[in-house]
Image (cartoon, rainbow, N blue to C red; front, side):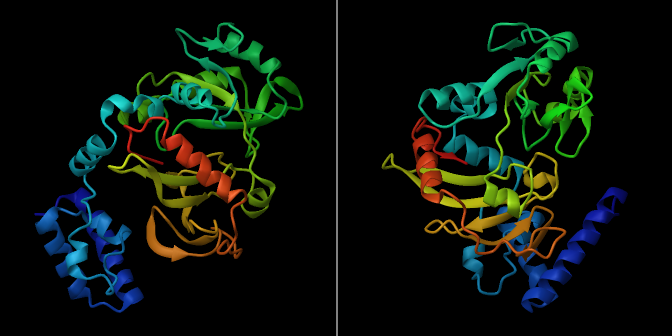
Length: 328
């Protein structure tokens, strides 16, 4: 008997099978056999089959069997091997990351303070623990705005990008979308810990307050005000030398301040030699696209500014903690 909550999943799988079949001309029966065989063989996962685009007839079945399962247990084993838990704190805690990598001379955003109901502080040594403290700080905050984000934030959850003070109230700031935020709203925002707790974040009411980084003018013209970043994946092999495995530029045209794929951004491949953008995909669909969502403007072929320097910074950062062998 099929449980009620599994019916939408079955509908989605059937839709994906039909889409994949129409796109690559593979028989529906062949895709179904692939799914059954790969999940019996190594529990690949249905979502991973489509995200990896293993329905492509150019991929031999023997190669499909080499793909890693997209399951919680398999992912945990892989991460434990590549980046053991004792080396993960700098990548989980944004203040620790800033201080370690900034201390190595790498470019990081300027930190203004940490809001925390128990131990919050500004870089000048003032308390930052309640709405009154936040209000005092906001009255002398930078006019070009700041970022308020969970200290142990995951997947882009709980991030506010404030673009500047509201015209009628210097103690209130506006978001990229024009929403007005005051100190009381920030405290209320910080108390929304449910999603962070579900994802295992430590200290879910602690928030980093840091400098707002504006996008490069070329990228701002392409995408808009949200700071869209390039994820460069590095790996340190047995020879101890960092290398770049791949890179993806995230395109988020909405004024959300967050470019994570969970929020509808498109991740497009970056040519490692030239820095030119290739076609991209969203997390919610496995089909490729070459245009910015909601527009007819293409991004394919655009070269990321300062691409050689981006690669240099990524490789330098990878060498700071070489025991964390794979980071992005």
